[in-house]
Length: 237
Ligand SMILES: Nc1ncnc2c1ncn2[C@@H]1O[C@H](COP(=O)(O)OP(=O)(O)OP(=O)(O)O)[C@@H](O)[C@H]1O
Image (cartoon, protein in one colour):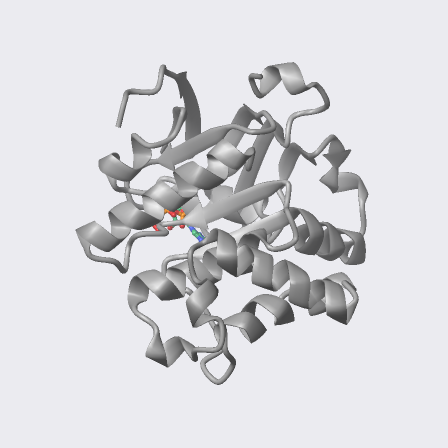
């Protein structure tokens, strides 16, 4: 079944989205961007330094509001909801993975995954079950009780990925997810993202690394705030 055949609204829909930082001087970081990411798609976003990738991530992740156009997440027009609703939507529907892991150092892997669900009002027992299941999924069943300081870089990123997917978000949004990892560990994290995609997860990865970009089904390029969407067939790994 293709993503498109699953029906329903796209997970991400940018309609002429722009963001100008007020300055002075004002900076048009994104300009009139149109983009659709369908459920189950794996899209990578590339572009030179300063092109607007972080601005894109901030808007797609509901961390920032566009100054023009509209952004629909799962068909919900996020420009028509208030800050509280936006924060709740972000918590429930977007899983973030960053280059720097951002784990709580004095909490175990399991607690790190569980705690992220506190704000989603998931009952305690269900938090535990979901966290255990997510850690199993990323191959860390045997390291659930370890503190992040006792984990390798790759294992830390697996915990971060488990934390991001534990509540089955609509979109897994990754910012340079392999940027802090050696090439072998990076390859294993990219294989994990492939596996999650195979499970049906909708994934967007922002990267400057062409090898990472190639892993997506299609790559979107941002240059000087202008987004170009380039569909392409996936090459065999
Ligand atoms: N808070 C801000 N105020 C003013 N200008 C900003 C602000 N944040 C970013 N910019 C500018 O907006 C443009 C896009 O920046 P952005 O951080 O989105 O680029 P990027 O592609 O993520 O860059 P990098 O790869 O170096 O992280 C740049 O010209 C940047 O200088």
